[in-house]
Picture 1 (cartoon, rainbow, N blue to C red):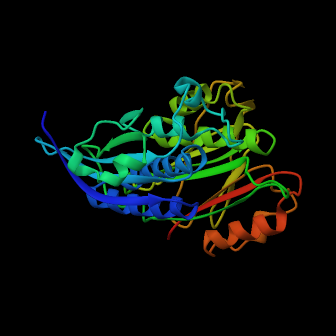
Picture 2 (tube, rainbow, N blue to C red; picture 1 turned 180 degrees about the vertical axis):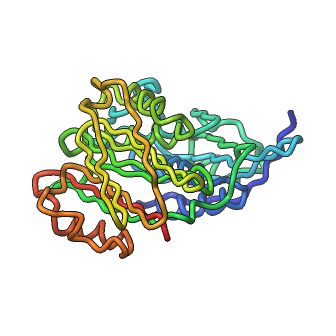
Length: 353
């Protein structure tokens, strides 16, 4: 199969500021190719990890070359060549293992890059047409990671505009890494998956657990909720473990599905009623019961609120004005009701009336 390559952009990597620059430019280029919001989010993670890997492990400087690929049958992809000035990787299997790092970092990078890539290569100056790379790159940088991500043949452009989202999260005072995580992923113009995840304890190990689960949900978000919970449970083995509240919203049918493992709390509130969400005991990555999905009506004017146990019980839904933007309410809860001895997260979704 003939593949045509077009070099689009070459970006220098010298400082932490380049992580954001490379991520934003890559996501923008991916949008032009036709990637949807979910896949662009994966590309953002992938590129952030590529650039961070250069800064932490690749000699502190490098280049990233971004190309478009197109096949003779019109399939399209975005391709990244990430060059660095480091000493290379002596034990690739070790380096690919999550949580292992020689630089006092989380050690998530290479594993994450591999999982979010359709093609992953690493080595000494991976073969690339000479006219695609200037002589300075060839002479100055001796190592390269190449990744390719194909535009899905069936994709959509846009987001679920029927819902309004607010989320706020902060780590325990004194820590720099948050053991909580949340995600919102639009699967189509009417379907959205969202979650609040709480890694056990706090600090690096909790952060590792919650973010590995978040990553796996993004990768497998097309699965039914029960299968998705089982998948992330297996993926989280070897980590400290986490609890989760996971929801699926379909605004076309005005339905909401919820499955909870552990002590993530939540409720659906409407102008006339409040329904609490039921979670079952267990820890993802360690032991869980057979997941059970609960179905609810989710009508225009309704809101759902999920929060980790870092939020105290000293508040009532009646304390909030649910007609306000959910971001204001999420910030209010975080600012006024967060515990001082735990990470805390709030996610609120309104079905716009």
